[in-house]
Image (cartoon, rainbow, N blue to C red; front, top):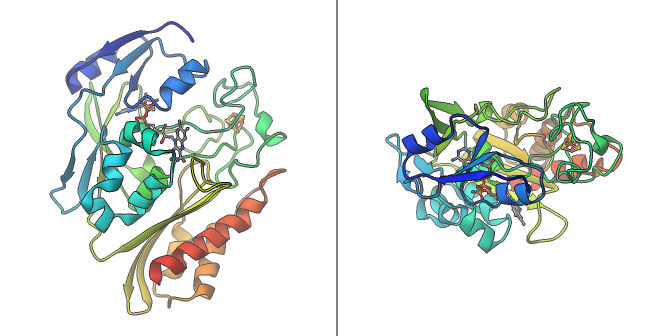
Length: 324
Ligand SMILES: Cc1cc2nc3c(=O)[nH]c(=O)nc-3n(C[C@H](O)[C@H](O)[C@H](O)COP(=O)(O)OP(=O)(O)OC[C@H]3O[C@@H](n4cnc5c(N)ncnc54)[C@H](O)[C@@H]3O)c2cc1C
Ligand code: SF4
């Protein structure tokens, strides 16, 4: 592990001040960053421990939504009574991931920025455009069974591994950030960046910006659900997952939001599939047709073609379950 200095900060201004100067990284629960530093994949010169900041709150938003503080742990969010009642998709997504111990440490902000599980990215001796821009992408001809089929480029096919973020995408969350220049809010649809020719850039967050909250819109009257398919039932990342939220009038879908996990280089929103379902009558046929639309344009590699049908079935089943 490269040598680094560490500062523990007590308030947001102190955190922003500490992030000026040498390349710095915030650390919250540490369940992503510390692993990557130990593996010599991430090499920050300066680490800023933010876990004492007053950002672990979960509060009602003025519009009736819910504000998740960046340091609210994944466990606290998943078990919050309003999340369980009104944002079931988020509770189910979080509880499908990792382990109780990790969820007790993992934070909302840290989860937003967790890194891919591509094995080449996590091996500092391998080439990897995401870790070392311009070095190549061995996954395209190598081990790619768990990698992406949507949003890929010739430079990177890594999957965004998060479950939480797929639910946040379907919920249209807004990410609030602070920097020395002020505050801004990023719609989650504009937070993640496709790999293109620069897979090392994963989000629109700027250096030194601190995530302070993720805000969920009011969702009363919606039903929602997260379905995750993986090689084993616990302690495993998604091969394919679907986050769905629907509003029904009788058996008619009046509104719907869909996001896919495990198959995209970013948490994958499916607006064309949503459009196809608005006004449709609940049926397996309509759901399967929408799921096929969601996977339109999917591009597989040597080992992951199975994901296209798996994700199609996953989304179809998630829609059947949420409307049952
Ligand atoms: C064994 C294992 C299994 C896992 N399984 C799953 C799974 O099945 N599904 C799943 O979704 N996840 C899984 N995870 C990932 C886990 O959810 C993440 O590691 C966790 O959410 C990261 O949160 P953290 O607070 O620990 O982040 P940290 O490690 O503290 O930080 C992660 C990144 O975010 C940055 N950061 C943190 N907070 C902020 C902030 N407020 N503002 C700006 N930058 C910030 C850090 O600089 C760092 O780059 C697993 C992790 C492990 C170790
Ligand atoms: S898929 Fe992306 S993360 Fe994996 S080796 Fe290629 S460039 Fe690196």
